[in-house]
Image (cartoon, rainbow, N blue to C red; front, side, top):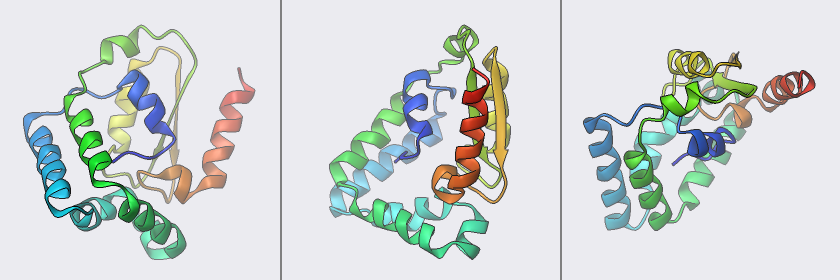
Length: 160
């Protein structure tokens, strides 16, 4: 389940290599489990701890609660569809390399799902990219540190 603002860009540009087989198999396992159980238990137990950074877990309980609520309310069919769609996405780094446009890659310093090193690879693939690493945030940086995320976006847009 990817519900961050970056997911729109991710779905358009698919800035990741295709999932390796173990990741595809895990996504399928999650899809089957959510459908079989009719609920998001597997997401709450396995994915939720990776969606936000350790700083958010320790210092921003309201953000963790909001993310938990979003995950808990996700319809099982939608979760299964999203997991399977992510597993099926092709490698699109060639598309990124050919994208001659300004781009902003934002990543939380504590992101374990798409870590800083992965974001750096994406930014390097984009000819005109800027990389911003937000301290104290995990995968859902726009929710975890909204002021910092907004400041990075405004700074980027002001240069266009």
